[in-house]
Length: 366
Image (cartoon, rainbow, N blue to C red; front, side, top):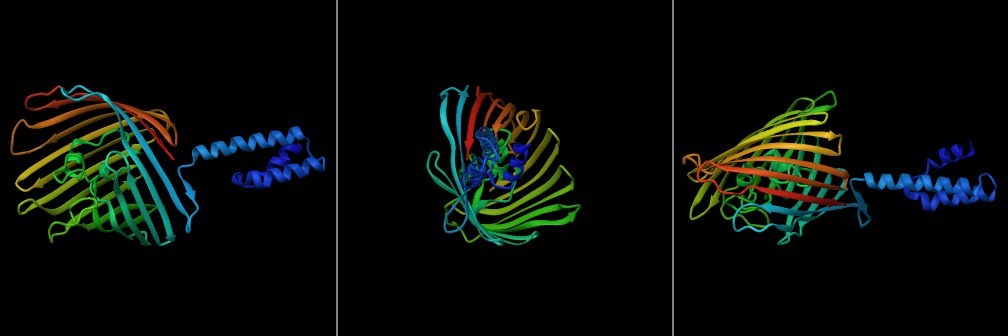
């Protein structure tokens, strides 16, 4: 009974202050013979276990500086089995990111994110001004508000890789402007509106960007316009669209336009989502779409996924598209560590290439 009363009293003390406060109380109670040494040791052990559980479940930690800042990051180590002739199987560091965020006030915040894998690069460098739920500004280098899969964080995705059409048309690895990690420099305005039963029915973002990618000055006077609107008619169901209008300087300015539609549904352990994107670069029109589904066999721990992914590099030319079939799985050890595996079968409409591949990726974060 004494032990239960003691635990209740000490429960008002923060776990993080255990060493400074609780131990002093325990020593005083032992000295006054209110509890025995064995009871005190038992309380210490229980508190230590609770502290370990609390630390393991933390998604972020804060660092003391001139102002309170949040420092996080993650590393992804990958092994690839590559069937294509001339390519070698092996390990690589896929991503090694350090992410710094902070709030100057309830209305002003900032973010700096870098990636040290391969050639180090600055990914995010922006400030946010939060005025109302429906009116917020983002100024600097950030992801362009186009495509749900582009906006998804790489350390939260169910599949290891993004879809072919997202990689090709949303400033990523296979885009004509080079791999910009889906980002650009500019200004955005966005927010949420239409509140109904404690949730918003609509999210939007619109922005003006250089159109040249990360860490790059604009190469022409034209500024690229991007807009995205997503509706949430019922809980767990999202439907939206994105539009991009820009130019790219080659020898002369060329059109660089895109539009996309997206759909997402989540229910308990199950999800299904898909996107269609079409883009025009100069006289060439490209498009593609994907559909993906997944189910947690063990809630929040073990998930299976399947994905159909197709992309056409030039709609005016026949037999130049490709289709990818993906099966994969993710096991979450906890909030900061997981392993993913996937195997992709690729089929080309023209001459087929033996280019199926498998990937195993381990991720650890802090």
